[in-house]
Amino acid sequence: MRMELGGFFREFAKYNKKILKKLIILGILVLYFAFLIFYNHFRINLDYSVDGSWIFGIISGLISTVVLIFAVDTLWFLYKKRK
Image (cartoon, rainbow, N blue to C red; front, side, top):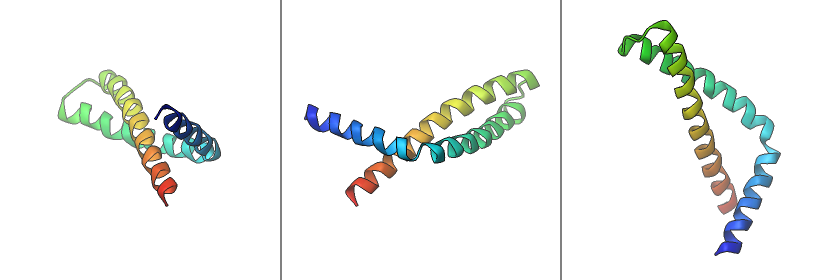
């Protein structure tokens, strides 16, 4: 079990090194759109000030971007591995 898990992480790291350029571009695009969505949510729906909306929009955008990119990357890797 431990050897299988270590092998999985080694393959996952090797796969990510291969597509790192695409991951960076995708991450920047997702971060931009997540920031816009969260900024507008905090500004319009929750009536935050402009400064608060910027701060919470950036923080929320960063967190959601990391989670989304990691989840999609992991699912795509598992799909490619099983294929």
